[in-house]
Image (cartoon, rainbow, N blue to C red):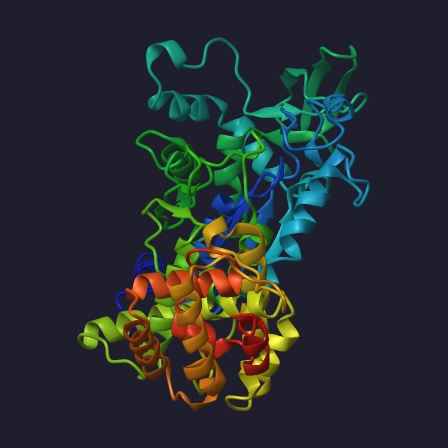
Length: 530
Protein backbone atom coordinates (compact mmCIF):
# COMPACT_ATOMS: atom_id res chain seq x y z
CA UNK A 1 0.00 0.00 0.00
CA UNK A 2 1.51 3.33 -1.04
CA UNK A 3 1.69 6.36 1.20
CA UNK A 4 -1.47 8.47 1.07
CA UNK A 5 0.44 11.64 0.33
CA UNK A 6 3.80 13.30 0.41
CA UNK A 7 3.21 14.23 4.05
CA UNK A 8 6.41 14.07 6.10
CA UNK A 9 4.96 11.41 8.43
CA UNK A 10 4.23 9.11 5.49
CA UNK A 11 7.68 9.71 4.03
CA UNK A 12 9.24 8.83 7.40
CA UNK A 13 7.11 5.68 7.69
CA UNK A 14 8.23 4.48 4.28
CA UNK A 15 11.85 5.25 5.16
CA UNK A 16 11.58 3.14 8.33
CA UNK A 17 10.23 0.18 6.36
CA UNK A 18 12.85 0.63 3.67
CA UNK A 19 15.80 0.84 6.09
CA UNK A 20 14.64 -1.63 8.75
CA UNK A 21 13.05 -4.13 6.40
CA UNK A 22 9.62 -5.72 6.50
CA UNK A 23 9.16 -6.60 10.17
CA UNK A 24 6.45 -8.20 12.27
CA UNK A 25 6.62 -5.28 14.72
CA UNK A 26 8.13 -1.80 14.49
CA UNK A 27 9.12 0.02 17.67
CA UNK A 28 8.92 3.81 17.77
CA UNK A 29 10.28 5.64 20.80
CA UNK A 30 10.27 8.94 22.58
CA UNK A 31 11.12 10.04 26.10
CA UNK A 32 12.18 12.77 28.47
CA UNK A 33 13.49 13.45 31.95
CA UNK A 34 10.60 14.73 34.13
CA UNK A 35 12.89 17.31 35.75
CA UNK A 36 10.22 20.01 35.55
CA UNK A 37 7.11 20.94 33.64
CA UNK A 38 6.91 18.89 30.43
CA UNK A 39 6.37 21.76 28.03
CA UNK A 40 4.92 22.10 24.55
CA UNK A 41 8.39 21.87 23.01
CA UNK A 42 8.69 18.39 24.52
CA UNK A 43 5.21 17.61 23.20
CA UNK A 44 6.49 18.26 19.69
CA UNK A 45 8.60 15.11 19.94
CA UNK A 46 5.70 13.08 21.34
CA UNK A 47 3.25 14.06 18.60
CA UNK A 48 5.91 13.74 15.90
CA UNK A 49 6.34 10.10 16.89
CA UNK A 50 2.57 9.63 17.12
CA UNK A 51 2.11 10.94 13.58
CA UNK A 52 4.75 8.54 12.23
CA UNK A 53 3.17 5.69 14.23
CA UNK A 54 -0.17 6.49 12.60
CA UNK A 55 1.45 6.57 9.17
CA UNK A 56 2.99 3.13 9.76
CA UNK A 57 -0.34 1.73 10.94
CA UNK A 58 -2.06 3.22 7.90
CA UNK A 59 0.39 1.16 5.85
CA UNK A 60 -0.90 -1.93 7.64
CA UNK A 61 2.05 -2.31 10.01
CA UNK A 62 1.96 -3.35 13.65
CA UNK A 63 3.66 -0.72 15.81
CA UNK A 64 4.78 -0.44 19.42
CA UNK A 65 4.95 3.19 20.62
CA UNK A 66 7.05 3.46 23.79
CA UNK A 67 7.56 6.56 25.88
CA UNK A 68 10.42 6.46 28.39
CA UNK A 69 10.28 8.48 31.57
CA UNK A 70 13.94 9.00 32.45
CA UNK A 71 13.02 9.37 36.10
CA UNK A 72 16.27 7.84 37.32
CA UNK A 73 18.19 10.88 36.18
CA UNK A 74 19.81 13.23 38.69
CA UNK A 75 17.85 16.15 40.17
CA UNK A 76 20.38 18.84 39.26
CA UNK A 77 18.46 22.12 39.53
CA UNK A 78 15.23 23.41 41.04
CA UNK A 79 13.11 25.02 38.28
CA UNK A 80 12.04 28.57 39.06
CA UNK A 81 8.33 27.81 38.69
CA UNK A 82 8.30 25.12 41.40
CA UNK A 83 6.86 25.68 44.89
CA UNK A 84 8.82 24.91 48.10
CA UNK A 85 12.16 25.89 46.56
CA UNK A 86 14.17 25.50 49.78
CA UNK A 87 12.68 22.10 50.49
CA UNK A 88 13.46 20.86 46.99
CA UNK A 89 17.07 22.05 47.21
CA UNK A 90 17.65 19.48 49.96
CA UNK A 91 17.22 16.77 47.33
CA UNK A 92 19.72 17.99 44.77
CA UNK A 93 21.84 15.10 43.44
CA UNK A 94 19.09 12.58 44.32
CA UNK A 95 17.37 10.57 41.58
CA UNK A 96 14.32 12.54 40.48
CA UNK A 97 12.05 9.68 41.46
CA UNK A 98 13.14 10.10 45.12
CA UNK A 99 12.41 13.83 45.29
CA UNK A 100 9.10 14.51 47.12
CA UNK A 101 6.20 16.10 45.30
CA UNK A 102 6.11 19.79 46.37
CA UNK A 103 2.34 19.83 45.71
CA UNK A 104 1.80 16.75 47.94
CA UNK A 105 -0.35 15.11 45.28
CA UNK A 106 1.80 12.22 44.06
CA UNK A 107 4.38 9.88 45.51
CA UNK A 108 7.29 11.83 44.00
CA UNK A 109 8.34 14.94 42.10
CA UNK A 110 8.91 12.83 38.99
CA UNK A 111 5.54 11.11 39.23
CA UNK A 112 3.76 14.48 39.50
CA UNK A 113 5.16 15.66 36.17
CA UNK A 114 4.64 12.25 34.57
CA UNK A 115 0.99 12.12 35.59
CA UNK A 116 0.36 15.66 34.33
CA UNK A 117 1.32 14.43 30.86
CA UNK A 118 -0.29 11.00 31.05
CA UNK A 119 -3.75 12.40 31.80
CA UNK A 120 -3.52 14.94 28.95
CA UNK A 121 -2.17 12.86 26.05
CA UNK A 122 -5.34 10.75 25.53
CA UNK A 123 -7.24 14.03 25.01
CA UNK A 124 -5.24 14.55 21.81
CA UNK A 125 -5.50 10.92 20.77
CA UNK A 126 -2.07 9.76 21.96
CA UNK A 127 -1.69 6.64 24.12
CA UNK A 128 1.89 5.31 24.23
CA UNK A 129 3.22 2.49 26.37
CA UNK A 130 5.07 4.12 29.27
CA UNK A 131 8.44 2.83 30.47
CA UNK A 132 9.74 4.01 33.85
CA UNK A 133 13.52 3.92 33.92
CA UNK A 134 13.83 4.14 37.71
CA UNK A 135 11.77 0.97 37.96
CA UNK A 136 13.76 -0.75 35.23
CA UNK A 137 17.17 0.18 36.65
CA UNK A 138 16.19 -0.76 40.20
CA UNK A 139 15.00 -4.13 38.91
CA UNK A 140 18.48 -4.63 37.35
CA UNK A 141 16.82 -5.01 33.96
CA UNK A 142 19.89 -3.48 32.30
CA UNK A 143 22.56 -5.44 34.18
CA UNK A 144 23.77 -7.06 30.96
CA UNK A 145 23.92 -3.71 29.17
CA UNK A 146 25.88 -2.18 32.05
CA UNK A 147 28.37 -5.03 32.06
CA UNK A 148 28.78 -4.71 28.30
CA UNK A 149 29.63 -1.01 28.73
CA UNK A 150 32.22 -1.85 31.39
CA UNK A 151 33.77 -4.47 29.13
CA UNK A 152 34.00 -1.91 26.30
CA UNK A 153 35.16 0.96 28.50
CA UNK A 154 38.14 1.91 26.31
CA UNK A 155 36.14 1.61 23.10
CA UNK A 156 33.44 3.86 24.56
CA UNK A 157 36.03 6.41 25.60
CA UNK A 158 37.41 6.46 22.06
CA UNK A 159 33.93 6.91 20.54
CA UNK A 160 33.00 9.75 22.90
CA UNK A 161 36.35 11.50 22.28
CA UNK A 162 35.98 11.22 18.52
CA UNK A 163 33.86 14.37 18.28
CA UNK A 164 35.64 16.37 20.99
CA UNK A 165 38.50 18.78 20.62
CA UNK A 166 41.68 18.22 22.66
CA UNK A 167 40.50 20.47 25.49
CA UNK A 168 37.34 18.43 26.07
CA UNK A 169 38.63 14.88 25.61
CA UNK A 170 38.24 12.53 28.58
CA UNK A 171 41.23 12.78 30.91
CA UNK A 172 42.46 10.08 33.30
CA UNK A 173 40.44 7.11 34.49
CA UNK A 174 36.89 7.08 33.20
CA UNK A 175 33.87 4.89 33.85
CA UNK A 176 30.67 4.68 31.77
CA UNK A 177 28.53 4.35 34.89
CA UNK A 178 27.46 6.41 37.88
CA UNK A 179 26.10 5.21 41.20
CA UNK A 180 23.48 6.55 43.56
CA UNK A 181 24.83 5.93 47.04
CA UNK A 182 22.89 3.22 48.85
CA UNK A 183 23.30 5.13 52.14
CA UNK A 184 22.48 8.76 51.25
CA UNK A 185 20.91 8.40 47.75
CA UNK A 186 23.15 11.04 46.14
CA UNK A 187 25.25 10.49 43.04
CA UNK A 188 28.32 12.16 44.56
CA UNK A 189 30.17 8.90 44.12
CA UNK A 190 33.33 7.58 42.50
CA UNK A 191 34.04 4.14 41.03
CA UNK A 192 36.92 2.32 42.71
CA UNK A 193 37.08 -0.88 40.70
CA UNK A 194 35.27 -3.49 38.66
CA UNK A 195 36.08 -7.19 39.05
CA UNK A 196 35.56 -8.01 35.36
CA UNK A 197 32.26 -9.76 36.01
CA UNK A 198 29.36 -8.48 38.17
CA UNK A 199 31.10 -6.79 41.09
CA UNK A 200 31.43 -3.00 41.10
CA UNK A 201 33.02 -1.07 43.99
CA UNK A 202 32.34 2.58 44.73
CA UNK A 203 32.68 5.23 47.44
CA UNK A 204 30.51 8.23 48.29
CA UNK A 205 32.14 11.64 48.77
CA UNK A 206 29.06 13.00 50.55
CA UNK A 207 28.65 10.47 53.35
CA UNK A 208 31.81 8.31 53.14
CA UNK A 209 29.91 5.09 52.43
CA UNK A 210 31.80 2.35 50.55
CA UNK A 211 30.57 -0.94 49.15
CA UNK A 212 30.83 -3.49 46.38
CA UNK A 213 27.56 -4.23 44.60
CA UNK A 214 26.44 -7.05 42.34
CA UNK A 215 25.21 -5.55 39.06
CA UNK A 216 22.55 -8.25 38.88
CA UNK A 217 21.04 -7.01 42.13
CA UNK A 218 22.25 -3.41 42.47
CA UNK A 219 19.58 -0.70 42.60
CA UNK A 220 21.71 2.40 42.19
CA UNK A 221 24.05 1.74 39.25
CA UNK A 222 23.19 3.65 36.09
CA UNK A 223 24.84 4.15 32.71
CA UNK A 224 25.91 7.64 31.70
CA UNK A 225 23.36 9.20 29.38
CA UNK A 226 25.33 8.94 26.12
CA UNK A 227 25.72 5.23 26.76
CA UNK A 228 22.32 4.65 28.35
CA UNK A 229 20.43 5.96 25.31
CA UNK A 230 21.97 3.57 22.73
CA UNK A 231 21.89 0.69 25.21
CA UNK A 232 18.12 1.08 25.45
CA UNK A 233 17.80 1.30 21.65
CA UNK A 234 19.20 -2.20 21.48
CA UNK A 235 17.30 -3.43 24.55
CA UNK A 236 13.92 -2.26 23.19
CA UNK A 237 14.82 -2.89 19.52
CA UNK A 238 13.94 0.69 18.58
CA UNK A 239 13.39 1.36 14.88
CA UNK A 240 12.53 5.06 15.01
CA UNK A 241 13.18 7.94 17.39
CA UNK A 242 13.46 11.65 16.52
CA UNK A 243 15.59 14.11 18.46
CA UNK A 244 15.87 17.87 18.88
CA UNK A 245 18.24 19.91 16.76
CA UNK A 246 20.69 20.24 19.66
CA UNK A 247 21.07 16.44 19.83
CA UNK A 248 21.19 16.19 16.04
CA UNK A 249 23.95 18.75 15.59
CA UNK A 250 27.13 17.60 13.89
CA UNK A 251 29.09 15.51 16.39
CA UNK A 252 26.26 15.79 18.93
CA UNK A 253 24.76 13.18 21.17
CA UNK A 254 22.89 11.39 18.39
CA UNK A 255 26.10 10.91 16.41
CA UNK A 256 27.92 9.42 19.39
CA UNK A 257 24.91 7.29 20.33
CA UNK A 258 24.78 5.91 16.80
CA UNK A 259 28.41 4.77 17.06
CA UNK A 260 27.91 3.31 20.54
CA UNK A 261 24.83 1.44 19.41
CA UNK A 262 26.58 -0.12 16.42
CA UNK A 263 30.08 -0.74 17.82
CA UNK A 264 29.23 -1.71 21.41
CA UNK A 265 25.67 -3.04 21.41
CA UNK A 266 25.67 -4.42 17.84
CA UNK A 267 22.39 -2.79 16.88
CA UNK A 268 21.78 -0.31 14.09
CA UNK A 269 20.63 3.05 15.44
CA UNK A 270 16.99 3.94 14.78
CA UNK A 271 15.81 5.95 11.82
CA UNK A 272 15.51 9.53 13.00
CA UNK A 273 14.89 13.12 12.04
CA UNK A 274 15.61 16.47 13.61
CA UNK A 275 12.81 18.56 15.06
CA UNK A 276 13.19 22.25 15.77
CA UNK A 277 12.34 24.37 18.77
CA UNK A 278 8.98 25.96 19.47
CA UNK A 279 8.65 29.51 20.73
CA UNK A 280 5.84 31.38 22.41
CA UNK A 281 4.77 34.39 20.38
CA UNK A 282 6.02 37.56 22.03
CA UNK A 283 8.60 35.68 24.11
CA UNK A 284 12.25 35.39 23.08
CA UNK A 285 14.28 32.21 23.23
CA UNK A 286 13.38 28.56 23.53
CA UNK A 287 11.31 27.10 26.33
CA UNK A 288 13.17 25.60 29.25
CA UNK A 289 11.81 23.51 32.12
CA UNK A 290 14.65 24.56 34.39
CA UNK A 291 13.95 28.27 33.84
CA UNK A 292 10.25 27.79 34.44
CA UNK A 293 9.54 29.69 31.20
CA UNK A 294 7.10 27.23 29.70
CA UNK A 295 3.61 26.45 28.51
CA UNK A 296 2.41 22.88 28.51
CA UNK A 297 -0.19 20.81 26.69
CA UNK A 298 -2.87 21.76 29.20
CA UNK A 299 -2.24 25.45 28.45
CA UNK A 300 -2.46 24.76 24.72
CA UNK A 301 -5.76 22.90 25.08
CA UNK A 302 -7.36 25.81 26.89
CA UNK A 303 -7.23 27.75 23.61
CA UNK A 304 -7.13 25.07 20.90
CA UNK A 305 -9.39 22.06 20.52
CA UNK A 306 -7.55 18.71 20.39
CA UNK A 307 -7.94 18.54 16.60
CA UNK A 308 -6.64 22.07 16.05
CA UNK A 309 -3.78 21.44 18.48
CA UNK A 310 -2.78 18.38 16.43
CA UNK A 311 -3.21 20.43 13.24
CA UNK A 312 -0.53 22.89 14.40
CA UNK A 313 2.00 20.04 14.35
CA UNK A 314 0.63 17.83 11.55
CA UNK A 315 0.66 20.83 9.23
CA UNK A 316 4.23 21.87 10.03
CA UNK A 317 7.39 19.98 9.10
CA UNK A 318 9.27 18.95 12.27
CA UNK A 319 12.47 20.71 11.19
CA UNK A 320 10.63 24.03 10.93
CA UNK A 321 10.72 26.37 13.92
CA UNK A 322 7.39 27.96 14.76
CA UNK A 323 5.69 29.84 17.57
CA UNK A 324 2.59 29.02 19.55
CA UNK A 325 0.25 32.00 19.47
CA UNK A 326 -2.39 33.06 21.96
CA UNK A 327 -3.12 36.46 20.42
CA UNK A 328 -5.27 37.37 17.38
CA UNK A 329 -3.38 34.73 15.36
CA UNK A 330 -5.62 32.19 17.10
CA UNK A 331 -8.53 33.30 14.90
CA UNK A 332 -6.44 32.81 11.75
CA UNK A 333 -5.33 29.34 12.88
CA UNK A 334 -8.95 28.25 13.37
CA UNK A 335 -9.84 29.72 9.96
CA UNK A 336 -6.97 27.75 8.36
CA UNK A 337 -8.10 24.55 10.07
CA UNK A 338 -11.69 25.08 8.91
CA UNK A 339 -10.51 25.61 5.34
CA UNK A 340 -8.49 22.38 5.49
CA UNK A 341 -11.59 20.61 6.81
CA UNK A 342 -13.75 21.90 3.96
CA UNK A 343 -11.16 20.79 1.40
CA UNK A 344 -10.86 17.37 3.06
CA UNK A 345 -14.62 16.81 2.75
CA UNK A 346 -14.80 18.23 -0.78
CA UNK A 347 -16.93 21.20 0.27
CA UNK A 348 -14.24 23.59 -0.94
CA UNK A 349 -12.11 22.93 -4.00
CA UNK A 350 -8.33 22.79 -3.66
CA UNK A 351 -6.20 24.44 -6.35
CA UNK A 352 -5.13 21.03 -7.70
CA UNK A 353 -5.08 17.33 -6.87
CA UNK A 354 -1.74 17.53 -5.04
CA UNK A 355 -3.05 20.32 -2.80
CA UNK A 356 -6.18 18.28 -2.08
CA UNK A 357 -4.15 15.20 -1.07
CA UNK A 358 -1.91 17.33 1.14
CA UNK A 359 -4.79 19.06 2.93
CA UNK A 360 -6.79 15.87 3.35
CA UNK A 361 -3.81 14.03 4.83
CA UNK A 362 -3.08 16.88 7.25
CA UNK A 363 -6.73 16.81 8.28
CA UNK A 364 -6.73 13.02 8.77
CA UNK A 365 -3.66 13.19 10.98
CA UNK A 366 -5.20 16.08 12.94
CA UNK A 367 -8.11 13.98 14.15
CA UNK A 368 -7.94 12.34 17.56
CA UNK A 369 -9.63 9.27 16.09
CA UNK A 370 -10.71 8.46 12.59
CA UNK A 371 -12.12 10.95 10.11
CA UNK A 372 -15.90 11.25 10.51
CA UNK A 373 -18.23 10.30 7.66
CA UNK A 374 -19.82 13.74 7.48
CA UNK A 375 -18.23 17.14 7.88
CA UNK A 376 -18.62 18.66 11.35
CA UNK A 377 -20.83 21.72 11.71
CA UNK A 378 -18.53 24.70 11.23
CA UNK A 379 -19.00 27.85 13.29
CA UNK A 380 -16.14 30.34 12.79
CA UNK A 381 -14.09 30.90 15.92
CA UNK A 382 -14.36 34.68 15.56
CA UNK A 383 -18.14 34.43 15.43
CA UNK A 384 -18.21 32.13 18.45
CA UNK A 385 -16.17 34.65 20.44
CA UNK A 386 -18.78 37.31 19.66
CA UNK A 387 -21.65 34.99 20.56
CA UNK A 388 -19.98 34.05 23.84
CA UNK A 389 -19.56 37.70 24.81
CA UNK A 390 -23.11 38.56 23.73
CA UNK A 391 -24.30 35.72 25.98
CA UNK A 392 -22.22 37.00 28.89
CA UNK A 393 -20.03 33.89 28.81
CA UNK A 394 -22.93 31.42 28.96
CA UNK A 395 -21.92 28.72 26.46
CA UNK A 396 -25.21 26.83 26.93
CA UNK A 397 -27.06 29.88 25.55
CA UNK A 398 -24.73 29.94 22.56
CA UNK A 399 -25.34 26.26 21.80
CA UNK A 400 -29.09 26.85 22.10
CA UNK A 401 -28.89 29.74 19.60
CA UNK A 402 -26.87 27.68 17.13
CA UNK A 403 -29.25 24.73 17.39
CA UNK A 404 -32.05 26.95 16.07
CA UNK A 405 -30.19 26.92 12.74
CA UNK A 406 -30.28 23.15 12.54
CA UNK A 407 -30.11 20.09 14.77
CA UNK A 408 -26.79 18.73 15.97
CA UNK A 409 -25.87 15.07 16.24
CA UNK A 410 -23.80 13.86 19.21
CA UNK A 411 -20.43 14.31 17.47
CA UNK A 412 -21.32 17.77 16.14
CA UNK A 413 -22.48 18.85 19.58
CA UNK A 414 -19.27 17.55 21.21
CA UNK A 415 -17.05 19.43 18.80
CA UNK A 416 -19.12 22.59 19.05
CA UNK A 417 -19.09 22.48 22.84
CA UNK A 418 -15.32 22.03 22.81
CA UNK A 419 -14.86 24.98 20.46
CA UNK A 420 -17.24 27.12 22.55
CA UNK A 421 -15.18 26.39 25.67
CA UNK A 422 -12.00 27.52 23.88
CA UNK A 423 -13.68 30.64 22.50
CA UNK A 424 -14.88 31.59 25.98
CA UNK A 425 -11.44 31.11 27.51
CA UNK A 426 -9.65 32.97 24.72
CA UNK A 427 -12.08 35.89 24.68
CA UNK A 428 -11.92 36.29 28.46
CA UNK A 429 -8.26 35.51 29.15
CA UNK A 430 -6.19 35.99 25.99
CA UNK A 431 -7.89 38.32 23.53
CA UNK A 432 -6.50 41.87 23.24
CA UNK A 433 -8.58 44.54 24.96
CA UNK A 434 -9.97 45.96 21.74
CA UNK A 435 -11.50 42.55 20.94
CA UNK A 436 -13.40 42.24 24.23
CA UNK A 437 -16.77 43.79 24.89
CA UNK A 438 -19.89 43.68 27.03
CA UNK A 439 -23.31 44.58 25.69
CA UNK A 440 -24.80 47.61 27.37
CA UNK A 441 -27.68 47.04 29.76
CA UNK A 442 -31.08 48.50 29.01
CA UNK A 443 -31.20 52.07 30.24
CA UNK A 444 -27.55 52.81 29.49
CA UNK A 445 -26.98 55.45 26.86
CA UNK A 446 -23.95 56.56 24.85
CA UNK A 447 -23.04 60.22 24.45
CA UNK A 448 -23.85 60.92 20.78
CA UNK A 449 -24.48 64.11 18.80
CA UNK A 450 -27.85 64.80 17.19
CA UNK A 451 -27.02 63.38 13.76
CA UNK A 452 -25.57 60.21 15.32
CA UNK A 453 -28.63 59.82 17.54
CA UNK A 454 -30.91 60.20 14.52
CA UNK A 455 -28.89 57.55 12.66
CA UNK A 456 -29.15 55.09 15.57
CA UNK A 457 -32.91 55.70 15.65
CA UNK A 458 -33.06 54.75 11.96
CA UNK A 459 -30.88 51.73 12.67
CA UNK A 460 -33.35 50.64 15.36
CA UNK A 461 -36.41 51.11 13.18
CA UNK A 462 -35.13 49.82 9.82
CA UNK A 463 -32.66 47.13 10.87
CA UNK A 464 -33.05 46.06 14.49
CA UNK A 465 -36.84 45.91 14.38
CA UNK A 466 -36.75 43.61 11.35
CA UNK A 467 -33.43 41.90 12.02
CA UNK A 468 -34.89 38.42 11.49
CA UNK A 469 -35.96 39.34 7.96
CA UNK A 470 -32.40 39.51 6.67
CA UNK A 471 -31.37 36.29 4.97
CA UNK A 472 -27.64 36.88 5.43
CA UNK A 473 -25.02 39.34 6.60
CA UNK A 474 -24.70 40.86 3.12
CA UNK A 475 -28.32 41.99 2.92
CA UNK A 476 -28.13 43.33 6.48
CA UNK A 477 -24.95 45.25 5.67
CA UNK A 478 -26.60 46.80 2.60
CA UNK A 479 -29.42 48.08 4.81
CA UNK A 480 -26.90 49.58 7.26
CA UNK A 481 -25.07 51.43 4.45
CA UNK A 482 -28.41 52.73 3.17
CA UNK A 483 -29.14 54.17 6.61
CA UNK A 484 -25.78 55.96 6.62
CA UNK A 485 -26.72 57.61 3.36
CA UNK A 486 -30.20 58.52 4.60
CA UNK A 487 -28.77 60.03 7.81
CA UNK A 488 -26.11 61.97 5.90
CA UNK A 489 -23.26 60.22 7.75
CA UNK A 490 -20.15 58.53 6.48
CA UNK A 491 -20.50 54.76 7.04
CA UNK A 492 -17.49 54.86 9.40
CA UNK A 493 -19.28 57.46 11.57
CA UNK A 494 -22.42 55.32 11.68
CA UNK A 495 -20.40 52.26 12.67
CA UNK A 496 -18.73 54.17 15.48
CA UNK A 497 -22.08 55.45 16.77
CA UNK A 498 -23.57 51.94 16.61
CA UNK A 499 -20.68 50.42 18.55
CA UNK A 500 -20.87 53.17 21.14
CA UNK A 501 -24.59 52.56 21.53
CA UNK A 502 -24.18 48.79 21.83
CA UNK A 503 -20.87 48.21 23.66
CA UNK A 504 -19.45 51.61 24.56
CA UNK A 505 -16.49 51.32 22.15
CA UNK A 506 -15.50 52.91 18.86
CA UNK A 507 -14.97 49.52 17.21
CA UNK A 508 -16.34 46.03 17.52
CA UNK A 509 -17.28 42.84 15.64
CA UNK A 510 -18.46 43.09 12.02
CA UNK A 511 -21.64 45.09 12.48
CA UNK A 512 -24.09 43.19 10.28
CA UNK A 513 -23.13 39.81 11.74
CA UNK A 514 -23.05 41.32 15.23
CA UNK A 515 -26.58 42.72 15.00
CA UNK A 516 -27.93 39.44 13.61
CA UNK A 517 -26.33 37.56 16.51
CA UNK A 518 -28.13 39.56 19.21
CA UNK A 519 -31.62 38.54 20.25
CA UNK A 520 -34.11 40.97 18.65
CA UNK A 521 -35.85 41.97 21.87
CA UNK A 522 -32.55 42.53 23.63
CA UNK A 523 -31.26 44.59 20.71
CA UNK A 524 -34.37 46.76 20.68
CA UNK A 525 -34.16 47.13 24.46
CA UNK A 526 -30.64 48.56 24.25
CA UNK A 527 -31.50 50.93 21.38
CA UNK A 528 -34.83 52.16 22.73
CA UNK A 529 -33.03 54.98 24.59
CA UNK A 530 -32.43 56.68 21.24
